[in-house]
Amino acid sequence: MRDKNARKILTLCLVHQHPRILLGFKKRGFGEGRWNGFGGKIKKEEIIEEAVKREVYEEAGIDVSNINKSGILEFEFKGNPEILEVHIFRSDNFNGQPKESEEMKPKWFHIKKIPFHKMWPDDKHWLPLFLAGKKFRGRFLFDESDNILEHNLSVVKRLEENNRKRQRK
Image 1 (cartoon, rainbow, N blue to C red):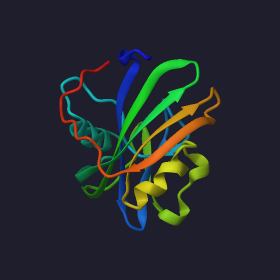
Image 2 (cartoon, rainbow, N blue to C red; image 1 turned 90 degrees about the vertical axis):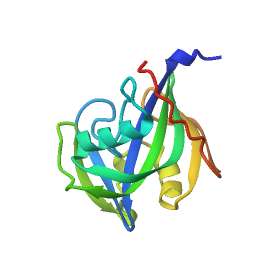
Image 3 (cartoon, rainbow, N blue to C red; image 1 turned 135 degrees about the horizontal axis):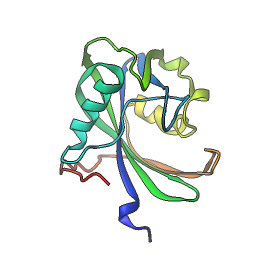
Image 4 (cartoon, one colour; image 1 turned 180 degrees about the vertical axis):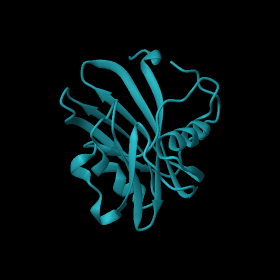
């Protein structure tokens, strides 16, 4: 059994205004060189929803509203005991204009032209569920080269709502 201290809680938010989705090109850090949603770590004494809004503002310069949790995914990397638990949110409304930050370069994509070949390999599995408005849970195990070794993904009726404040690990 894994030590619970080896779990890191993260956020990811995708702005979806059908038929387009806002993604960010990661310019530095974990995931550099890939298109992704906006998100990251939860600060001490911050609830997940606050972290989502803060991260999107820091990375894309927009204030998201009307956020809804769509999924929870766990990511493991072979040889690393830490589990990344990512809470995925959707927003269809925001204030401001997306603008480039030091970390991300936002760009709108038509849902039929999502650049899966320049994204994390797991995205092609769960993003169609997200776009279809489904709620989901899953787990992905990657090797040292970011190839998927194992995965499971399922549609769920609802996700547990947990608004308690999280401690930074």
